[in-house]
Length: 216
Image (cartoon, rainbow, N blue to C red; front, side, top):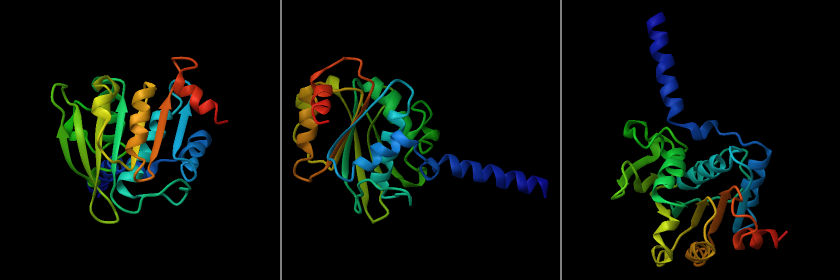
């Protein structure tokens, strides 16, 4: 009996690790950021290091991709599969931050599914060229039927790589250059989609920061 109980406990723990989304409970500032999405297309979570900005972004993106919204959710909802971009400054930083939080440890493919996106919702991953263990795109099952698509981008790719697509949402982790931000926002115009940013203001009163502060 003890052995069976141990096996069951280990199985439950594995299942829990592969569905971290079900356990997410935001603190007050994260909750405020999520709730604001119900009314605002553009949102900025600006705070110091290690205060849960990227964590909040990763779990919100997982909710939109899967359609698995918790009972406490008061933010925007997507009831059907949609298309999204997430990005950081470089392909390496994107891999080591947003990809890691969304999927799991980049260097351990067997751990993909232990991030914010539940393991049972990940239908396919497509590796990026030129960056070890980096993912270019993920296909995610949506509870409404069909699949959402998530593509990973980087600011270093330049404005030209940010043109042409039509998206339901864009998540910028770390502050983007203004021209990249404008291109990301433009990609959501046709759908009325959202843009969210999570970063520490290391560049001071930049054009992007000033644009949000001017709205207060």
